[in-house]
Image 1 (cartoon, rainbow, N blue to C red):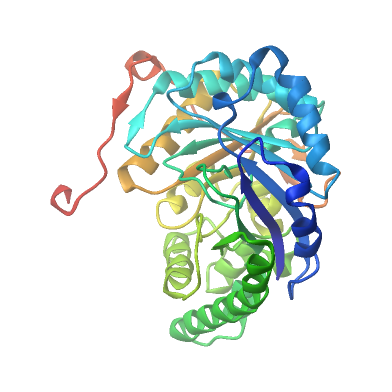
Image 2 (cartoon, rainbow, N blue to C red; image 1 turned 90 degrees about the horizontal axis):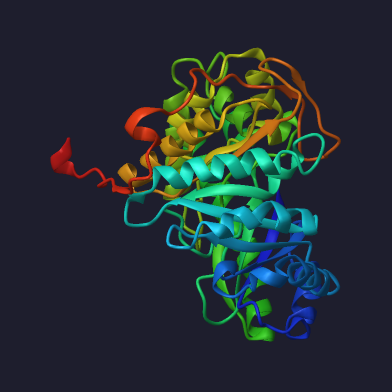
Length: 399
């Protein structure tokens, strides 16, 4: 297991020198390797001057990078922020390679704006052109029903107030081992709970003195079982290890629910999603299943209903229509509202590639795969209108 990130949550005017020593210390005090240190601010439309936005963001990123911050999240453009902030995103993301941003497509009250999905679809297409291979959308995601304080990027943002920090882990290997060493479902559940609690306790033994020394609040661990693109660190491999012929086959939904339920039973200071992460390009086994065509975008969305964070690093045809992208986003927003759970969508149209084409990036966190299919021609009729609507969450009476 590794620590994917130690993420600081700050106001945008927080001086860098106030946190420099903390950032240095945070890289060395944990019992697991720390891959990155990151910084998340309050949503940028509340404090950024549009006329000097790119220069300001570039300088801000350089200042934080100088003290050891690897990545910076500007937080989301909220539903109530003006549309012109969305149009600024491609420019901001092109200003520096350490910047992440997000767009809210559904708020925490169940409000969804189909037109915002359509606008974001246009931005996703534009961002796909920032870099020649479509890599730019790694830094942009859609949010639905997401609270502040998650340490994973691109979802991370600060809700305001004093500085605090949280831990994001890369821990799919714990699930692989838990399943491989079990002979029953009960034993697999026990193994995973024990592994999570043991790791969380070890992390806590480092965070408590760290928080006390630097006068910061420690807000918990997002123990989502994030993968790394090798089979021994693949969440899809753990799910298949329960007895699936392959992820995408019948029984996959149960496997996803089973592993997520075990995380829910574990005792640790939690924040963020603390569920399953099934990012297609970051998981070697999942990337192969997508390349084989045995798992679809709709399959992944179905698993999100019982477990994970939504749709992540999904390789899509470069010529996918804005209407089709908007439809995917609208589905994610509806699921988040109806189930009252946080979900994201990080969609990656790849210029010049069509469904079934090989996908390969020179990036250590990505596995090779193929472009996934998206059926249909996209939204039309009343679904393509700008009318906001509130989707009530499911209650027991609704069943």
